[in-house]
Image (cartoon, rainbow, N blue to C red; front, side, top):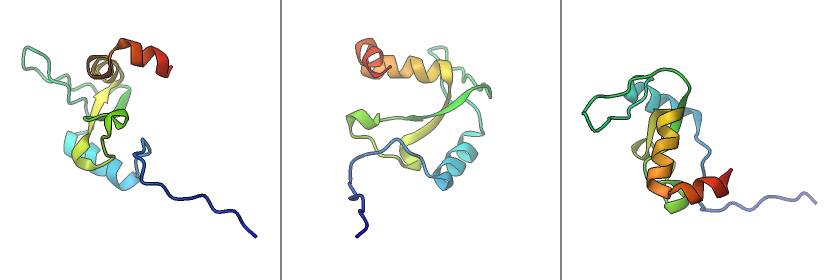
Length: 91
């Protein structure tokens, strides 16, 4: 008898390739962070996918809830939204 893992409806950080491609195309394969001065970062270095509403807060892995950020801005947003204590506990 084979064991089967049970499917859960819990949010996941895993991003299917089809969604990755759609988000990259929509965001122009560049960081979408916009600073207080209204300027977009636009970096194409060390890009990461960011859940606008974090998975930890119930956010979905969907095209609508994902954006492309450079590593620095992804870390900045994580601290802004979740706080530095959460970030330290997650690492």
